[in-house]
Length: 240
Image 1: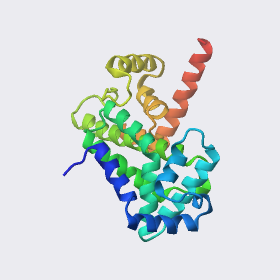
Image 2 (image 1 turned 30 degrees about the vertical axis):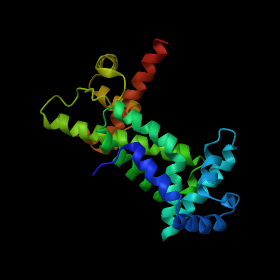
Image 3 (image 1 turned 90 degrees about the vertical axis):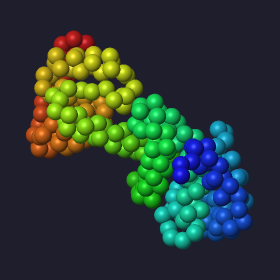
């Protein structure tokens, strides 16, 4: 049974208001100094969502929640729920953009978004991240776009069409005409390397991923990409 996006948030909000959840929240906040001032989940969410709150303080709060979410037991689930609610405005924006990009149905987008956010929270390395919310949001949205692009590329190749053609699947947001113009302009400069450059420089694929789509080894893809970028740079220098 599927749930509407707003119903998922309502369910999380209801869960955070139960006595059992409050007890788990008390354990979490007493174990992490940045959370100690917040008596209940509502106060914490209010502190995070207020535009006047200090960004550094918000980051410390999110870091504390992630530390708790990466632990074990019911307090981990409590912290994860708080993180989902804390990040909800950003998640909602990703959901709307993903539906606009036609990444999938509303239900599929919601399910994928929540699953990827959970995975991102559980796996984020706090020692390497400075801006928790921005990093998680960027990585989740990038991975959703890449997954859709890989699916589209496989469908495209399976159809027997020219693998050097650039399809418009709504992923870019520039539409079919925009993609056609982009492909034409880059192809004039780079020839057969146009799709490789578009995949890597514009769509966010790695060189290895783009190379695999085109039947190239990672080394060959890297060499062709570097050569193509030099040609593109030279062309732009000649025609500023």
